Amino acid sequence: MCHHCVVESVKSRMLSRRDFFRGSAVAAGAAALAATAAPRPLFAQAASPMRAIDLTHELHEAFPTFAGEQQFFMEPKYEIGSDGYNLNIWTMEEHVGTHIDAPLHFSEDGASVAELPVEQLVCPLAIIDIRERAEADPDAQVTPDDIAAWVAEHGDIPEGACIAMLSGWDRHVDTDMFRNADADGGMHFPGFHPEATDMLMAETGARVIAVDTLSLDHGPSADFAVHYSWLPSGRYGIECVANLGELPASGATLVVGAPKVRNGTGGLARVFAMV
Amino acid sequence: MCHHCVVESVKSRMLSRRDFFRGSAVAAGAAALAATAAPRPLFAQAASPMRAIDLTHELHEAFPTFAGEQQFFMEPKYEIGSDGYNLNIWTMEEHVGTHIDAPLHFSEDGASVAELPVEQLVCPLAIIDIRERAEADPDAQVTPDDIAAWVAEHGDIPEGACIAMLSGWDRHVDTDMFRNADADGGMHFPGFHPEATDMLMAETGARVIAVDTLSLDHGPSADFAVHYSWLPSGRYGIECVANLGELPASGATLVVGAPKVRNGTGGLARVFAMV
Image: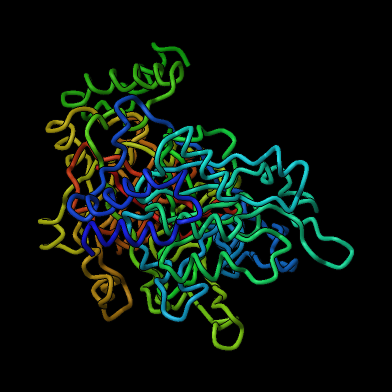
């Protein structure tokens, strides 16, 4: 696609926001073209020493799940006293704990978790802080205005970036508040608004979204609109991340230890940020 | 332990090699003391752009195992045609595919895979190339002389480093040669000699060893001497790594996406090198 086409395509999808985003969208289009010519360097900002922050919850049999049922089981197969060493067997659904949603999770033939290019597993991390709003309203969502505010403060969304929602929900992981189900079983926790992810797809080179809750869509979602648009586009998601509050809003690098399982729709991951 | 004690302890365990190692052992002892005073910086060498190399094999149901029996099972639970999305259930032993051996695997109360400090999951990578010897002898082992040769060429083993055996065995992963069982069922593939890991423990600050084969001990080992000395010391191992041949012998940084599973003795991992 030529530069002109990219610009026109972007413009046509963002008429309602052209006053705010036009400049950065053109820049993003140009950046996308530039990215095809030269690989994006990793850790280019790492002139000074870096340290790793763990963004992963510990997984155990009582870890909360979207469905409300146990999805991780562990039983010993060998024990050191009788067998000379310890070894367990795990039985687990792919979407439990801090984990990946690969495109294949919500598409017919999207990339499996093993097919995500390694270049997409190490990427810039942009953090959208909605803690104050989530505290007042558990159904809060990341909106286009939140993304606009991030761009206004930190500059364009970096090419290939992960946009992470910091709602503060990770602190609820060991309580019923993590699912926050009402009397009818409906859940209430923050997530992305589909208009926000539509904007990310139309106007930026973002490849990943991450949430510190059980789902990319917020708890009351009836249609999984974010899952059904973001994942089939070839992008991926990360759910149940922890410790985003320890990171700067801009400048960290995400390293996603996604399990390399053939035909997997996602799976348990170890996720770090380098700062 | 005081500086004098460290030096004396190291000296007493290396009399047979004092001609070669005495200087570096004293330096390592001093470095170990220094490391307790100031955290080791990560990516300190990353003044120039870095890229990620995937050191992970793809896991699938036919992936070869030490025991020779299938240890990873995957079955669909939901399918997009009938259920609106895809999701599988995995049943797996902890030690299948590219995976971690945590101290708890071969000790009564060593650290579980979830208890490995994040600082130990990102570390300098030193690669010992024994491909030529392994080609001639599948039972080849990494010896103290190999480590001495690495130090002579590249300098002291970095504090907290992972020492990885590059035998070239990863290329056999999809063939019977990976286990290389003889008529009596005995396996033949390279691994670490226990004298080499004893030396690493006595004379260096290495925390991790990695192999591109099915076991830290070489195939014919009858006593798992490396497992029974290295892991109970609080250090950990990585088995079935891939692509070490794409890396420099010195200078890469290892990032170990170990699964954060409570009480796990190890488990499927995503392993990268940053170069």
